[in-house]
Image 1 (cartoon, rainbow, N blue to C red):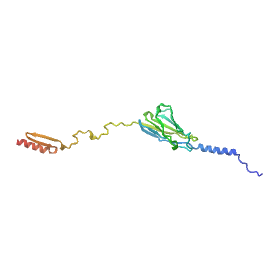
Image 2 (image 1 turned 90 degrees about the vertical axis):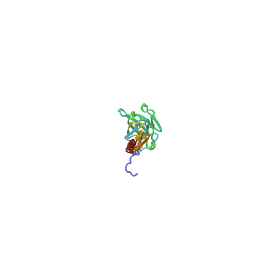
Image 3 (image 1 turned 90 degrees about the horizontal axis):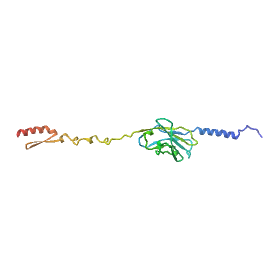
Image 4 (image 1 turned 180 degrees about the horizontal axis):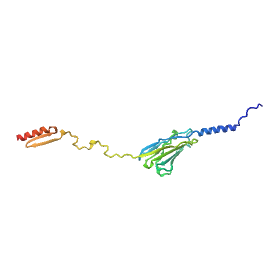
Length: 207
């Protein structure tokens, strides 16, 4: 039997292939995207957006975790978790009954809705998505800023002419004054005042 070059054991080759595959898996990571700021009116509903990309297919183990960091500082507090079509609200009374799922994993969307936003909701909201085996990645952050909705005074929408005196829009010639001397009467209109005065003098002289 001819003697050739020694061949690498099959086990060693499989080990090398396994290491290469492991490296390829670890080189990918979930990437998340959120707007830096979200401005909303006090008392309105806000959609906290979180989009992501992942090299792994979406499955029942795909999950999203939301946490909140108040403006006053301190550790972030997880308040909402979603996986396999189910919502898991946190125990924080601050958000109780106000948070619901608004995303769609099949569209790489992990957004949530926060209802009846209050000033106490100001702060930074953090979204984390895990899509096994793609479980490493960044965190999406966005700052929620709540503003006062201006209350219009009932008269603010009135036309400036709505409060005019009934005679304010009258033409100067529309005002009529009647002067009576004896049996004679003279009607004096705005622009004819001078003529009327002369006529009045003549009537007095004739009397």
